[in-house]
Image 1 (cartoon, rainbow, N blue to C red):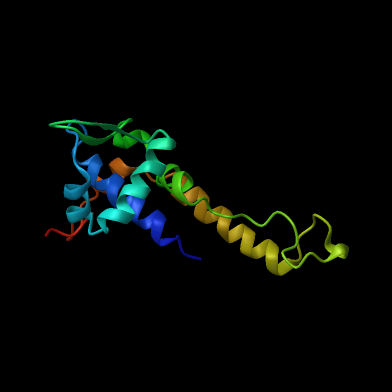
Image 2 (tube, rainbow, N blue to C red; image 1 turned 90 degrees about the vertical axis):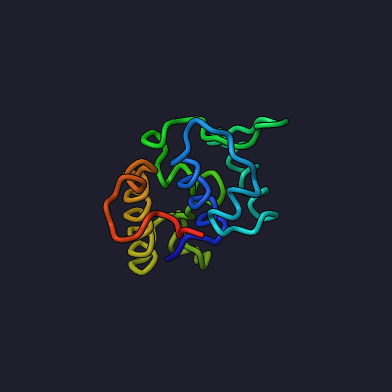
Length: 141
């Protein structure tokens, strides 16, 4: 199970913006820093804005910035804003005999998605920015 490319792009943008919490940044600069195509990034930023995670200001000195502190934004918040994790609620094969009870296979798949969802809910942008590793959260250009 992987997250979508859109979700990864959103995470890249939010993590990068999280390192600049007080300065509005233009789409071009975010695109270059996060290595996300500018056209695609514009759509991702619009979805993040609709979800209330970023806000944009226009004009000279305008751009995007986070609406909350990095410690108040979870990875799951970002993913849910652009491409929520799809949980298995009913039999994907639409087998009448299964009703709302999942078979062992689909129950295990859904359990794994639930664990992934919980891990993302418990991981914040601030934690990623603060984590001491040999590589920064995003590649340097």
